[in-house]
Structures are given as structure tokens and as C-alpha cells.
Length: 143
Length: 108
Image (cartoon, rainbow over all chains, first blue to last red; front, side):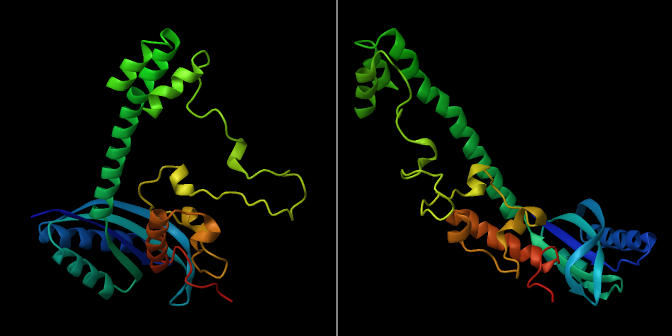
């Protein structure tokens, strides 16, 4: 089946010891591999100020990970685990593969257009100085 | 045909297709006449200028200029963002709000 990619961000209480956060990450990775999917990347953003208060807290420890999955089941399981783990105060899962696909498509499109543009503009520029009267027109028309 | 005839007329001076056109495209008038003059500067979509294909909701510092102090998303007519990028932008801002990177509303 088609492969999906998710961004998963969760926020822990700022007073959580680092070891506990590592433990949560490990359990999530375990849960993902159990379902046959994979957590590709894990980034600890560290303590950050949140834009608003959550559970009367102003700061939180952000952890960001990307998940590659073949189906949406794994998200349900990961979110369930995040919900029951006490230090986690907020989490968000976003499906990103469609956005990334669109981004790549646009990028390819842009590159192709950029590659085409010099060819289109070059012949008239090259033809004009050499033969402005007669030779210029046929070459420009052929392009 | 129009493309072909244009370079012929300009023959000796093969400059770009459009040599005319004022700087910045402002509709005439002296720009130095204080702040109150009604010369409207043409707004350009910032994302189009930077050729952005994807607006990342994780980068709050990019999204921050597009929300009001109270937390509202600024309309296109204020920022000049094009329709397509505004569409992406709103989604990105809403995602950022959900993970507390941007505020829903200002705290008092």
C-alpha cells in the first residue's frame, strides 16, 4: 500500500527528567516497530516557551519525530500512548506526505521551467546582433 | 508574430523586450511628499518572491508576521499574500497554534 508520513510533536512538562523523555521516545519507537512501521527521525527541541499556558505551565519540552507508516493504525496507537503517559501535556500528529509530494512536484516544475527558459530567450538574443535584418526572423520562428 | 517583429524594429539596440517601465511600478507622483500621500505601494506576496513551495508550520518565526497582536490571522489585503500561499499559510498557522508555537489569542 501507499506509504504515509507523519509529523509527530509532543510536549512534556518542563520538569521531566531527560531519562523519562528518552523512555517515552523508546516506548513510542517500540510501538511503531511492533506495528511494522518506523520512526525515522527524532529531534529533541528542548525546553521552549509555549505561546499560551497549558496545564498552567508556560514552558514545555518539545520532541519532534517523523513517522513512516503504511496505514493510519500506528497513529492511533502512538496517540493513545501519549495520552496515557503523564508527563506529556500536548501532542500533535500531522500527515505530511501529501504536502511533501506537492512540494516536490512544484519544485520539479520550477526546475523544469528554469531549465527551459534560457533556451527560449537565448536564440533571439543571439540572432539579433548577428543578423538583425534577414537572418533573425526564421530562427526565431522555428523556436 | 509579434515576438518576431519586435527585435527587428529595435535592430541596433537589442535590449530586453520591455525597456520601459518605471522603478517599482509606482503610479507616478513624487514619493517624497511625506507619509500622507496616497501613493499605494504594490504589495507582493512574500512567499512568491522567495519561491516557497511549502510553508512549514514548525517555523513559528516565519508565520509570526502574519498574525495580529491579538492572534488573528491577517487577511490577504493587509499582507499582499497571494491566494494560494494564503491558503497554505492559514493551515500552517492553525497547526502551529495547536502545538502552542503560536497563540490562539493574546494572553492578558
